[in-house]
Image (cartoon, rainbow, N blue to C red; front, side, top):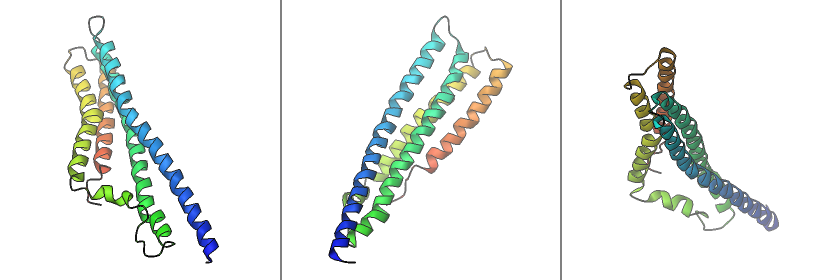
Length: 181
């Protein structure tokens, strides 16, 4: 490959890097806002269920809201991680091959993962994710089940919701990325 061709390839790789980093930034913002959306939806559902003497059956809206928002959070989080892996494992080596004596071009993509407290931070994040997307909706189900106002069809719905929460919980744990880089 000629120097001119290498320069063109290098520029194309930089443009690709800029584009995937922009997607990653956008996904991070969206993912982080999902936390606030989840908290707001939970607050609204709890408020509605407490108004007018209390309607515990309205708490059955909390699990589907949590699962839907939690799944969207998880998918975006996985895509954010996938973009990072792509940069580290694919884009960086291709660009580094064009730069003599340069083992890595995008050092930060690896350096921030080498922090010795990364695993403890990831564990705390896992705990926060489980609290928001799993524990809170299970608590809503428990409140409904112990309210003394349970009805047959709603019990069936609540059991189905508990299964959805279990599936989401497993997926959150699977995708927690608790291993070393």
